[in-house]
Length: 246
Length: 246
Image (tube, rainbow over all chains, first blue to last red; front, side, top):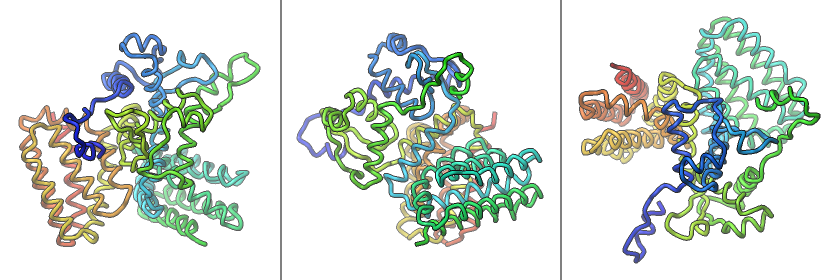
């Protein structure tokens, strides 16, 4: 984009699209993971050693580490010697959440489209869970449905609600689905919380939601794939309608 | 995770989970976007001014800008005075692509699960496009199907292929779908290119793929939602089988 507008200028040369040093450091660490030389839990050399191995400045290494942290690819232990404590993370989806939030925000993605994507992924998850869930899974999901009656705020209740949906996606067995579910929730969290503020009593709404969760889990336990899928679709859609109410 | 293991130590206090300065700068810029004070295309103050406004170090501002760039939330023009040229981006999905690639890599998400997610999102897109696509949309999609007969490498053909799938998702009208489609492609790009290397002739495979695209677009143009959706499902699944061949 920037490139084409700069082509209008009188300069005889266009700026080259070379990656900057911190981007190359990020790419090199990713390559080490791809090649199996680094994996989740492995400790990274400290900033000074990394800079010397890669023959780049410590600033470039620090910038790359910040980027990898925000993507959830690197964890840095808090409260200890900061850069001596960096390890490769297990990719717990922090980056997926942040990036979906920023992307929907900057693109002005309407809530309707986020909900449509949720319905798609979560009704399929409910469908699959009807064959894959064990009795233990169902009991855990039921516990996660009732846990939030003790929530002290809409924010807390919302986190417990998200945890239920992510766990259901986990039980359904697609390794990518839980991060997607969490990311889509993160993308609509502002709308969700604003919606709850407008409600006379958010506890009533969450109680209703919780009852719907129990119904979905019962259908999953009974192996009723189609009905569980449809119940999930209605559950996600109804929440959207509540959000859109005056 | 780190937190609980540190609880075993003999220290009387646990490290606090306070956000670091660069994270607060990222959050503050995101807040300005949420509040409508900053939006796509707006130019950011330079590094020195930002640091002075926020009363943080220039290093913290620089780290935050790198993070926002990698998430695709900020663009910095190349070849000019670097930090004087930062603008809020249109959220073109660069972050979604990077994060899905890193997440699937670190989590060891199997190709099967990525394909399952693609089938879900793209067959729904084909279904919706059968009602939403104009004749112009269909002609553009057909052109995008034949363009790649001139591709000089499997990488280039793969990029043109991805562009077709993202454009189809755009035509279907969910504002979140194109970035998802691109992100899922990015997550499987290594497997794809390795698969093509094993093939005797990647051109033959792409020609077959291109013919399937033409069929999908024809069904969309004819308004055959169910058939277009099923053709897309078969197309994505067949490619997965090709990848998995010896």
